Image (cartoon, rainbow, N blue to C red):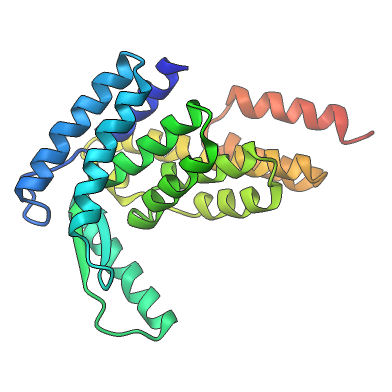
Length: 246
């Protein structure tokens, strides 16, 4: 389990590296958060989950102390993240009828801290405490498909099929611009396809639980178009074929 978690977060950390030199997030707190996050990953590698939570709490508490409830905060790793955050904030302000919402960019380490804490709390059998951390990560990084998938997974693990289906469906329609804009376009496309395929498999799983066999099959076929021969999708399709006729 530790290897799976560590691999997962190394992928996230690599794709959304904390750019302390970026003018949008350049301050002492960003540098300190990045250092603390490295310590959290070290504890994760060693399997010391309580210490992972302690380190992520240091980042979260720094953020919570400084934030203004009147502002909207977004985690950024590059220019595209800033643009996405501004667009989302503008849309939310229009929908809510509010004006002059100040959008403040913070280091992506803040989002990773919330997400890592939530993920680790699940492994520590503290699901209820994990949820608000996963939700905050999604709120602060609204185009992060990986975060969205894991939030949907939380509901799936709790047997809340319809809620999980809604969240996986929303995740399947996202494009993480911080991944899409990577210099290595081949690696970028592989990551985007893997995250979208994860969404489609989640959609399929929930449809199976709801006995929506045709919809489940359609979602898996979408995954197989992105990743031909995807073994997890093929296993699920075999399950559908074996059970849909019953």
